[in-house]
Image 1 (cartoon, rainbow, N blue to C red):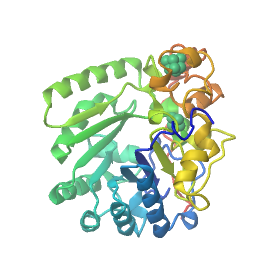
Image 2 (tube, rainbow, N blue to C red):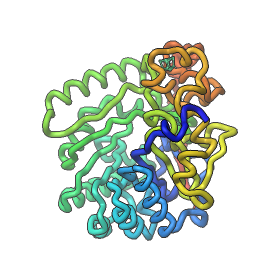
Image 3 (tube, rainbow, N blue to C red):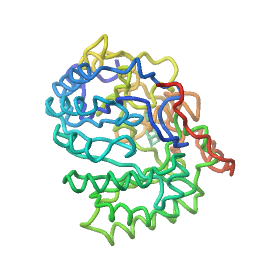
Image 4 (tube, rainbow, N blue to C red):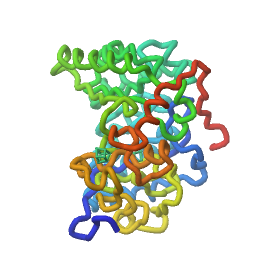
Length: 366
Ligand code: SF4
Ligand code: FES
């Protein structure tokens, strides 16, 4: 086990609860795995309740109730109440489809602390086009208004890519009009389904640079009104991000069927052994499961990470991206300019195509 004696075992802070993979939207940048969990395999609310209590006992402070679209769960109120009863700060991550204003009021009564609504663009036609769902934009706006009426803190999450990156300013203005206290400008991450659409979604370097300048200006202009979170997209960065704050260090993901992953894309790495909350406690999984220990700490690293002064800062970047781009999950994340595979990243970023998006359709998962 890498750097994980009992004394050194870190405490997780966050739990991503993927309540379902079902989702009415068809976003081409969906980061859910290619093989989705079917409805019949989803964990029951009572099991989620146990998972939340075990998470709280492990030191977890907050849970993100996510999907897919968590609103697809009929027992979402019960699940939220269980997370709240366990003492966790609860954040609902929703597309805005499948959660009505009255259901949101029930969720707030059940203890929901925060809501995050994704937007696909700053204007309706473009937003509905990328979501692959007519009418999605209007429903998101309505849910945001309901959240503000209920006094729920609201974050707007805007996923950006080549078609909308030039409207960062308009998206921040929209978040302000919706009453959000925070807006996350999230670049598409190319795992799972999103990899299929990389050439259609990849922005140009000049666009990325313009957007970074725009964000700086917006931060100064809106200081004290809204918090703007944005990071340079991986493929144009010099160093990688410390993905998940380090593997097996800060958070756990529980899939709809109960597998516990160190990150949402971990199943893309072949050969990892994941344990399930159906057969093990969360504490056992955190401490002993092979998947969590494979890349925990820094002892697993090879050159150039093994002796790099940044190794305990970025943990070698993202394991899933290292595998996707180099075929070796233990390699340095190739977005790092010190990686021997770095040239490949620039070559991939340069591949663009204007072909239409391959939408993510959830047919067949009930
Ligand atoms: Fe991070 Fe590894 Fe690059 Fe060093 S060599 S900056 S540890 S990815
Ligand atoms: Fe898996 Fe980054 S998404 S380690």
